[in-house]
Length: 163
Image (tube, rainbow, N blue to C red; front, top):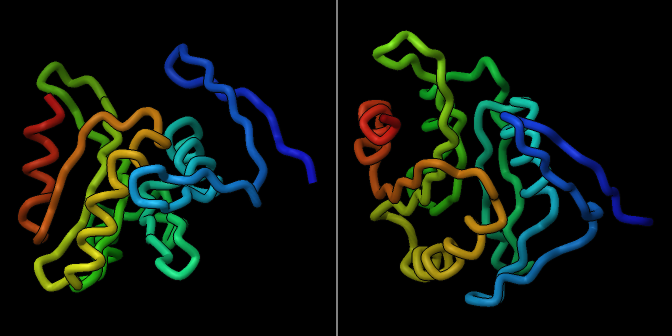
């Protein structure tokens, strides 16, 4: 099976897409690989707005980051936060729409490193050591949040970081 190559355009930028679904990229810091599906779904969210959010999970046995859940465009922020487990770490991206004081419709892509206090220490360490490399695979993140409980990633926090 060959790799797909294509172009996407959003906001005047052209993005070159390469890769095949079975291809993995190793994360040098932690030995975690990033499945191409993670990057392809992120590009769908960013360029086509196919999804409202994406939740990513590290599969420890396969040593790779995979897509766990895709949020529909009509899903709410509450749907997004409900998708994050109370006692397990995750990475997530959320497409945040808002209106500025000048009444302009804007959008920001928010990256959330979800690491609840009740998660296993080993899991917290793996997610922390893999975060920067994984985030670099997702070109176009505008806001980053590190959250250990829901109050640290509330809409008020995102709004304050969007200006």
